[in-house]
Length: 308
Image: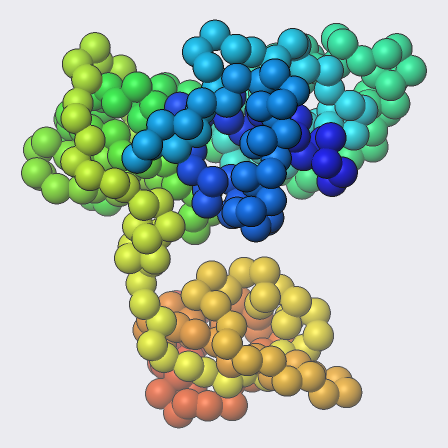
Protein backbone atom coordinates (compact mmCIF):
# COMPACT_ATOMS: atom_id res chain seq x y z
CA UNK A 1 0.00 0.00 0.00
CA UNK A 2 1.50 3.35 -1.04
CA UNK A 3 1.37 6.32 1.30
CA UNK A 4 -1.56 8.05 -0.41
CA UNK A 5 -3.70 4.92 -0.11
CA UNK A 6 -2.56 4.49 3.48
CA UNK A 7 -3.53 8.04 4.44
CA UNK A 8 -6.96 7.53 2.89
CA UNK A 9 -7.32 4.24 4.76
CA UNK A 10 -6.28 6.01 7.96
CA UNK A 11 -9.04 8.60 7.52
CA UNK A 12 -11.59 5.81 6.96
CA UNK A 13 -10.29 4.04 10.07
CA UNK A 14 -10.68 7.20 12.17
CA UNK A 15 -14.06 7.92 10.61
CA UNK A 16 -15.42 4.53 11.69
CA UNK A 17 -14.45 4.90 15.38
CA UNK A 18 -15.15 7.33 18.18
CA UNK A 19 -11.58 7.23 19.48
CA UNK A 20 -8.47 5.20 18.74
CA UNK A 21 -4.88 5.33 19.97
CA UNK A 22 -1.73 5.46 17.88
CA UNK A 23 -0.93 1.96 19.09
CA UNK A 24 -4.28 0.65 17.83
CA UNK A 25 -3.68 2.22 14.42
CA UNK A 26 -0.14 0.86 14.27
CA UNK A 27 -1.35 -2.67 15.02
CA UNK A 28 -4.18 -2.41 12.47
CA UNK A 29 -1.94 -1.24 9.60
CA UNK A 30 1.16 -3.20 10.61
CA UNK A 31 3.25 -0.05 11.05
CA UNK A 32 5.36 1.48 13.78
CA UNK A 33 3.83 4.02 16.13
CA UNK A 34 6.35 6.57 14.84
CA UNK A 35 5.07 6.11 11.27
CA UNK A 36 1.48 6.62 12.50
CA UNK A 37 2.48 9.88 14.17
CA UNK A 38 4.05 11.06 10.89
CA UNK A 39 0.90 10.10 8.96
CA UNK A 40 -1.33 11.93 11.44
CA UNK A 41 0.85 15.02 11.07
CA UNK A 42 0.57 14.77 7.27
CA UNK A 43 -3.22 14.59 7.52
CA UNK A 44 -3.29 17.65 9.75
CA UNK A 45 -1.11 19.57 7.26
CA UNK A 46 -3.56 18.59 4.49
CA UNK A 47 -6.44 20.10 6.46
CA UNK A 48 -8.00 16.92 7.82
CA UNK A 49 -9.31 17.83 11.33
CA UNK A 50 -7.71 15.13 13.47
CA UNK A 51 -8.25 15.86 17.17
CA UNK A 52 -6.33 14.36 20.09
CA UNK A 53 -7.83 13.98 23.55
CA UNK A 54 -5.77 12.97 26.57
CA UNK A 55 -6.61 9.52 27.88
CA UNK A 56 -8.86 8.69 24.94
CA UNK A 57 -6.84 8.94 21.73
CA UNK A 58 -7.50 10.43 18.32
CA UNK A 59 -10.73 11.18 16.48
CA UNK A 60 -11.99 13.17 13.54
CA UNK A 61 -13.84 16.42 14.17
CA UNK A 62 -17.57 15.79 14.46
CA UNK A 63 -19.31 16.23 11.13
CA UNK A 64 -16.20 15.64 9.00
CA UNK A 65 -16.92 13.07 6.31
CA UNK A 66 -15.15 11.92 3.18
CA UNK A 67 -16.98 12.23 -0.12
CA UNK A 68 -18.88 9.09 -1.22
CA UNK A 69 -16.50 6.20 -1.80
CA UNK A 70 -16.23 4.70 -5.29
CA UNK A 71 -15.62 0.96 -5.24
CA UNK A 72 -12.95 -0.51 -7.46
CA UNK A 73 -13.74 -3.49 -9.69
CA UNK A 74 -11.56 -5.72 -7.51
CA UNK A 75 -13.41 -4.62 -4.36
CA UNK A 76 -16.73 -5.43 -6.02
CA UNK A 77 -15.40 -8.88 -6.97
CA UNK A 78 -14.32 -9.46 -3.38
CA UNK A 79 -17.82 -8.57 -2.15
CA UNK A 80 -19.36 -10.89 -4.75
CA UNK A 81 -17.13 -13.72 -3.55
CA UNK A 82 -18.08 -12.99 0.05
CA UNK A 83 -21.76 -13.20 -0.85
CA UNK A 84 -21.23 -16.60 -2.46
CA UNK A 85 -19.34 -17.96 0.56
CA UNK A 86 -21.96 -16.53 2.93
CA UNK A 87 -24.44 -19.01 1.49
CA UNK A 88 -22.89 -21.59 3.80
CA UNK A 89 -22.96 -19.46 6.92
CA UNK A 90 -25.90 -17.05 7.06
CA UNK A 91 -29.67 -16.89 7.22
CA UNK A 92 -31.79 -16.17 4.16
CA UNK A 93 -32.73 -12.70 5.44
CA UNK A 94 -29.06 -11.82 5.84
CA UNK A 95 -28.29 -12.98 2.31
CA UNK A 96 -30.92 -10.55 1.05
CA UNK A 97 -29.18 -7.67 2.85
CA UNK A 98 -25.81 -8.65 1.36
CA UNK A 99 -27.32 -8.89 -2.12
CA UNK A 100 -28.84 -5.43 -1.69
CA UNK A 101 -25.42 -4.04 -0.71
CA UNK A 102 -23.77 -5.71 -3.69
CA UNK A 103 -26.42 -4.28 -6.02
CA UNK A 104 -25.58 -0.80 -4.75
CA UNK A 105 -21.90 -1.41 -5.45
CA UNK A 106 -22.67 -2.65 -8.96
CA UNK A 107 -24.80 0.42 -9.66
CA UNK A 108 -21.74 2.72 -9.52
CA UNK A 109 -19.51 0.49 -11.67
CA UNK A 110 -18.94 1.23 -15.36
CA UNK A 111 -21.03 -1.01 -17.69
CA UNK A 112 -18.06 -3.12 -18.81
CA UNK A 113 -16.94 -3.73 -15.21
CA UNK A 114 -20.51 -4.62 -14.24
CA UNK A 115 -20.64 -7.16 -17.07
CA UNK A 116 -17.37 -8.74 -15.95
CA UNK A 117 -18.66 -8.95 -12.38
CA UNK A 118 -21.84 -10.70 -13.50
CA UNK A 119 -19.79 -13.14 -15.59
CA UNK A 120 -17.60 -13.87 -12.56
CA UNK A 121 -20.66 -14.50 -10.37
CA UNK A 122 -21.94 -17.10 -12.85
CA UNK A 123 -18.53 -18.78 -12.92
CA UNK A 124 -18.26 -19.26 -9.13
CA UNK A 125 -20.18 -21.71 -6.98
CA UNK A 126 -20.11 -23.71 -3.77
CA UNK A 127 -21.86 -27.01 -3.02
CA UNK A 128 -23.96 -25.16 -0.43
CA UNK A 129 -27.72 -25.38 -0.69
CA UNK A 130 -30.24 -23.07 0.94
CA UNK A 131 -28.89 -21.89 4.34
CA UNK A 132 -30.28 -23.89 7.29
CA UNK A 133 -33.26 -22.46 9.13
CA UNK A 134 -32.06 -20.28 11.97
CA UNK A 135 -32.81 -17.07 13.80
CA UNK A 136 -32.54 -13.82 11.87
CA UNK A 137 -28.88 -12.90 12.28
CA UNK A 138 -29.53 -9.23 11.46
CA UNK A 139 -31.89 -8.95 14.45
CA UNK A 140 -29.30 -10.51 16.74
CA UNK A 141 -26.65 -8.13 15.39
CA UNK A 142 -28.91 -5.16 16.08
CA UNK A 143 -29.44 -6.41 19.63
CA UNK A 144 -25.69 -6.63 20.22
CA UNK A 145 -24.84 -3.28 18.60
CA UNK A 146 -27.65 -1.39 20.37
CA UNK A 147 -27.43 -3.41 23.61
CA UNK A 148 -31.13 -4.24 23.55
CA UNK A 149 -32.82 -7.12 25.32
CA UNK A 150 -34.15 -10.00 23.26
CA UNK A 151 -36.94 -12.43 23.96
CA UNK A 152 -36.79 -15.86 22.38
CA UNK A 153 -37.96 -19.44 22.50
CA UNK A 154 -35.18 -21.99 22.67
CA UNK A 155 -35.42 -25.66 21.79
CA UNK A 156 -33.45 -27.67 24.33
CA UNK A 157 -31.74 -30.99 23.68
CA UNK A 158 -34.87 -32.88 24.76
CA UNK A 159 -36.84 -30.94 22.06
CA UNK A 160 -38.88 -28.96 24.61
CA UNK A 161 -39.19 -25.17 24.25
CA UNK A 162 -38.06 -22.71 26.88
CA UNK A 163 -38.93 -19.00 26.93
CA UNK A 164 -35.91 -16.79 27.60
CA UNK A 165 -35.12 -13.08 28.02
CA UNK A 166 -31.45 -12.45 27.31
CA UNK A 167 -28.88 -9.67 27.36
CA UNK A 168 -26.84 -9.91 24.11
CA UNK A 169 -23.07 -10.34 24.29
CA UNK A 170 -21.74 -11.94 21.11
CA UNK A 171 -22.45 -13.79 17.88
CA UNK A 172 -19.94 -16.53 17.04
CA UNK A 173 -19.52 -19.05 14.24
CA UNK A 174 -17.88 -22.30 15.27
CA UNK A 175 -18.41 -26.03 14.83
CA UNK A 176 -20.37 -25.28 11.66
CA UNK A 177 -23.07 -23.13 13.28
CA UNK A 178 -23.84 -19.61 14.46
CA UNK A 179 -24.09 -19.27 18.25
CA UNK A 180 -25.76 -16.36 20.07
CA UNK A 181 -23.97 -15.68 23.36
CA UNK A 182 -26.07 -13.84 25.93
CA UNK A 183 -26.70 -13.40 29.65
CA UNK A 184 -29.80 -15.50 30.29
CA UNK A 185 -32.06 -13.93 32.91
CA UNK A 186 -33.72 -17.29 33.55
CA UNK A 187 -30.44 -19.08 34.35
CA UNK A 188 -28.68 -15.96 35.66
CA UNK A 189 -25.54 -16.82 33.70
CA UNK A 190 -24.03 -16.61 30.21
CA UNK A 191 -25.53 -19.12 27.84
CA UNK A 192 -24.63 -20.32 24.35
CA UNK A 193 -27.76 -20.42 22.17
CA UNK A 194 -27.50 -22.23 18.84
CA UNK A 195 -29.29 -20.00 16.33
CA UNK A 196 -30.86 -22.97 14.55
CA UNK A 197 -32.74 -23.72 17.78
CA UNK A 198 -34.03 -20.17 18.31
CA UNK A 199 -37.60 -19.27 17.35
CA UNK A 200 -40.06 -16.45 18.09
CA UNK A 201 -37.19 -13.98 18.31
CA UNK A 202 -38.22 -10.46 19.39
CA UNK A 203 -36.05 -7.39 19.83
CA UNK A 204 -37.26 -5.56 22.96
CA UNK A 205 -37.06 -1.81 23.48
CA UNK A 206 -35.27 -2.12 26.85
CA UNK A 207 -31.55 -1.42 26.74
CA UNK A 208 -29.00 -3.03 29.05
CA UNK A 209 -25.66 -2.08 30.54
CA UNK A 210 -22.72 -4.22 29.49
CA UNK A 211 -21.62 -6.79 32.07
CA UNK A 212 -17.98 -6.16 31.17
CA UNK A 213 -15.79 -6.72 28.17
CA UNK A 214 -16.88 -9.78 26.20
CA UNK A 215 -14.03 -11.39 24.28
CA UNK A 216 -15.37 -13.64 21.52
CA UNK A 217 -12.09 -15.49 20.96
CA UNK A 218 -11.68 -16.27 24.66
CA UNK A 219 -15.26 -17.52 24.82
CA UNK A 220 -14.67 -19.90 21.91
CA UNK A 221 -11.49 -21.24 23.52
CA UNK A 222 -13.35 -21.84 26.79
CA UNK A 223 -16.44 -23.34 25.11
CA UNK A 224 -14.76 -25.88 22.86
CA UNK A 225 -13.75 -28.92 24.90
CA UNK A 226 -10.07 -29.15 25.70
CA UNK A 227 -8.20 -31.85 23.80
CA UNK A 228 -5.60 -33.35 26.16
CA UNK A 229 -5.50 -36.73 24.38
CA UNK A 230 -3.32 -37.56 21.37
CA UNK A 231 -3.65 -40.35 18.82
CA UNK A 232 -1.35 -41.38 15.98
CA UNK A 233 -3.33 -42.41 12.92
CA UNK A 234 -2.12 -43.48 9.47
CA UNK A 235 -4.24 -42.21 6.54
CA UNK A 236 -4.30 -42.52 2.81
CA UNK A 237 -3.51 -39.22 1.12
CA UNK A 238 -7.18 -38.58 0.29
CA UNK A 239 -8.33 -39.42 3.81
CA UNK A 240 -5.59 -37.25 5.32
CA UNK A 241 -6.85 -34.30 3.32
CA UNK A 242 -10.34 -34.92 4.67
CA UNK A 243 -8.98 -35.22 8.21
CA UNK A 244 -7.30 -31.82 7.96
CA UNK A 245 -10.59 -30.28 6.85
CA UNK A 246 -12.94 -32.08 9.20
CA UNK A 247 -11.28 -32.94 12.49
CA UNK A 248 -12.23 -29.86 14.49
CA UNK A 249 -10.18 -30.58 17.63
CA UNK A 250 -6.93 -30.07 15.77
CA UNK A 251 -3.85 -31.85 14.45
CA UNK A 252 -0.57 -31.42 16.29
CA UNK A 253 1.88 -33.33 14.06
CA UNK A 254 2.19 -34.66 10.51
CA UNK A 255 4.60 -37.11 8.89
CA UNK A 256 4.38 -37.94 5.19
CA UNK A 257 5.68 -41.14 3.60
CA UNK A 258 5.58 -42.39 0.03
CA UNK A 259 2.07 -43.81 0.23
CA UNK A 260 0.61 -42.76 3.61
CA UNK A 261 0.26 -39.73 5.86
CA UNK A 262 0.60 -40.09 9.62
CA UNK A 263 -1.25 -37.49 11.67
CA UNK A 264 -1.33 -36.90 15.41
CA UNK A 265 -4.91 -35.97 16.25
CA UNK A 266 -5.96 -34.04 19.35
CA UNK A 267 -9.07 -35.26 21.11
CA UNK A 268 -11.08 -34.60 24.26
CA UNK A 269 -12.32 -38.21 24.39
CA UNK A 270 -11.75 -41.49 22.56
CA UNK A 271 -15.44 -42.11 21.85
CA UNK A 272 -15.98 -39.13 19.52
CA UNK A 273 -12.66 -39.69 17.74
CA UNK A 274 -13.40 -43.40 17.22
CA UNK A 275 -16.85 -42.60 15.84
CA UNK A 276 -15.39 -40.13 13.34
CA UNK A 277 -12.56 -42.47 12.30
CA UNK A 278 -15.07 -45.22 11.55
CA UNK A 279 -16.61 -42.96 8.91
CA UNK A 280 -13.32 -43.25 6.99
CA UNK A 281 -13.51 -47.04 6.76
CA UNK A 282 -10.19 -48.70 6.00
CA UNK A 283 -8.65 -45.41 4.81
CA UNK A 284 -7.51 -44.77 8.39
CA UNK A 285 -5.57 -47.06 10.73
CA UNK A 286 -4.87 -46.23 14.39
CA UNK A 287 -1.26 -46.77 15.38
CA UNK A 288 -1.66 -45.78 19.02
CA UNK A 289 -2.95 -45.65 21.73
CA UNK A 290 -4.43 -49.03 22.56
CA UNK A 291 -7.41 -47.34 24.27
CA UNK A 292 -8.54 -45.84 20.97
CA UNK A 293 -8.16 -49.20 19.19
CA UNK A 294 -10.32 -50.82 21.89
CA UNK A 295 -12.97 -48.11 21.51
CA UNK A 296 -13.10 -48.62 17.74
CA UNK A 297 -13.52 -52.37 18.27
CA UNK A 298 -16.32 -51.75 20.79
CA UNK A 299 -18.21 -49.40 18.47
CA UNK A 300 -17.65 -51.70 15.47
CA UNK A 301 -19.06 -54.65 17.42
CA UNK A 302 -22.12 -52.60 18.38
CA UNK A 303 -22.66 -51.65 14.74
CA UNK A 304 -22.34 -55.24 13.56
CA UNK A 305 -24.82 -56.34 16.21
CA UNK A 306 -27.46 -54.14 14.62
CA UNK A 307 -27.11 -56.06 11.38
CA UNK A 308 -26.69 -59.56 12.82
